[in-house]
View 1 (spheres, rainbow, N blue to C red):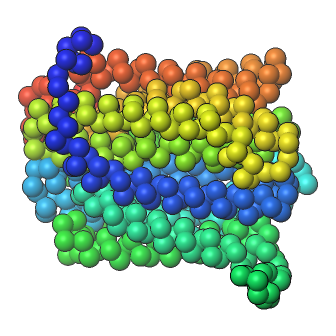
View 2: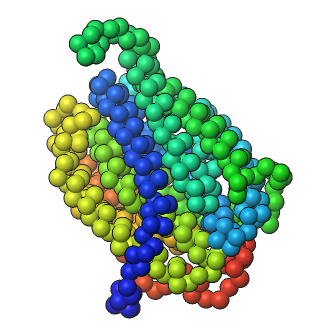
View 3: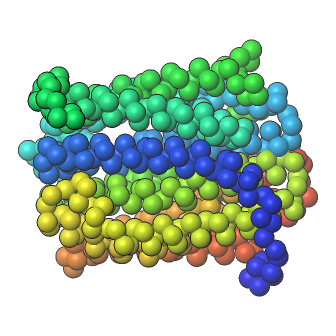
Length: 476
């Protein structure tokens, strides 16, 4: 079976189409990562305590954000298939229901995050001396949750319609504003020298709190901007459509979204448990883990950029019922992804210590962070394959199998393994990251087997081309 899959020629003529969708997402994530680097470095300049206070709640941020992203996946599949079938009215109806999803999810998670802000640092085993600061940072960061929900879900729908540039521009705006506000809010008023001229730079001196206010204000601005563009979009604008629940659209979207929501919620809870065990190892391990995660995120950019392209193009091909195009795109994107992630992993391995030094002056943090980064660098190509294959499954509305694969990997391998390695055998952060790598390798094996068997592609069986039917039956 493997030989039959590889013997087909790669359709390099599709390369411009793939990169036209992928590069804006890659640039957007590059900007986000660059700002995350700057953010971490700015906060890190305040000391290891500040880095630990901010980093300790990062996984809870993922939990809330990724759960909302799961709603976007349901609409992504539906809209991509509708656009592929040339049904603009159906795509616009789905957009109106996405507005409803933003209002409900954004409001719900605002209430949830703000009400639990005082408890999150306790659950995450943050050092008692840092809990008040960590709680305040979390509370401020999640105040504009409605705007963040709009950014996530509306951005996903725009990508599904083939518009990856608008989310990119919104992301760049958010990041630039965040950095500028950081500069004025984190540091106190001070003297700086520019081209030999000394000047007084005003500053609020709010430290970690200033970083939170800067991020919150930037998120609010980004949410407003992407909402305006979304409502003006020529294909998927929801203007003129009712925002009341339309179950003929919501039902298939939720059928795709709910398994992905459970997946992201379950894996994010796993990240919380994972981070809590790492936090219990002490300040050095927490800081090294936080910084290493920040560094590693830049090297996943090619993977997630290609995942966006694969999800959109797979959904379009399914809507158009073009089996050959689906197969050609899958092979091409996989080869591109492997090559990109080999280069990415090689660079991460070579420059790991230098990257850690950007964020910390602690010799212990640099040494430990470089070790775990070089470990994970070897697994980058394997993880990249699973990212792309998961994206293609999302595009065709298959979310049950990714849910099963990710839950098994997270809880059966990473969490159990990390507990044994850190709490029983005292292998520390190195043992925890070894379990994370084992989790990623398991996902590679499971997704690859599913792909080679051809079960991910609904066009391998004859079914209705309508998005409602495809979404309803794609996981059967």
